Every structure is written in C-alpha cells, then in structure tokens.
Image 1 (cartoon, helix red, strand yellow):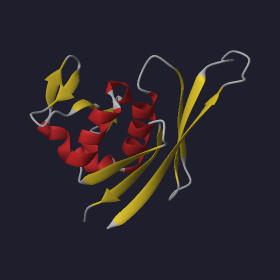
Image 2 (cartoon, helix red, strand yellow; image 1 turned 90 degrees about the horizontal axis):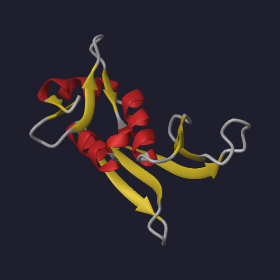
Image 3 (cartoon, one colour; image 1 turned 180 degrees about the vertical axis):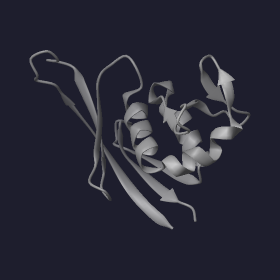
Image 4 (cartoon, helix red, strand yellow; image 1 turned 90 degrees about the vertical axis):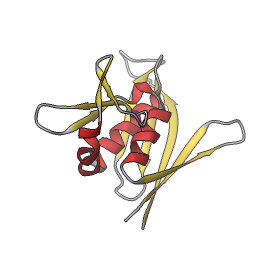
Length: 133
C-alpha cells in the first residue's frame, strides 16, 4: 500500500497580463511535480487534483473508462462518475471544474482512497491518497 501527500497552496499572480488572478497549486511530495491553475469561477482544487490524477494514474483511469456513458458532453456511469471523457487515442481526460467531489468519486472507482485535510477555517490544505494493491 502506497501513500501520497498532495499539498494544496494558494497565491495571487503578479504577472503583467494576469495580475490579481488567484493561483491554486497542488504539489505531489512523492514525485516533486507541481500542478497549477489560475483564474476563478470554477473548482480550482478539483482542477489541479484532476490534472494530478490524470498524469499519475492514467492506467487506472483507462481500466474504468468503459464503465461510463455520455451525459451533457461528459461521461457518467451508475456510480455517479462525472467529468471523465475518453479521448480518441484511448486515454482518459478529466475536467476537474466539475468539482472535487466528482474527482474523488473517480479516484475511488480507480482503487484510491482520498482523505481531505483542512485548516481550522475549513480551507483545503492537503489530500492523503492511499493506493490499494
């Protein structure tokens, strides 16, 4: 059983064209990779988590891709998986803007256990992901 700590942090852009935009970052402490998104008006934590899940566990996503059917342009199956789409090359893409809860359901269907960690104000600060054998 493997455990991964995913650290979530926030900042504000100081770039010329993006000054004032929120930046959400997710750092994988195991691989050292960083995933980020910028802007607002959508689930930014879900987006960076989806990028991580898509990049690190693509083979697990491909195992469950045939269980889904289309719903409003995305795929949804009877387990409530929403925000997952099969690409023409056979890989799976995820739309984290559909919400972190949808991404956690997809992770669970892949055999991953995702525990949420927050600060005293209820803000997301980390996820602990455990892989089942």
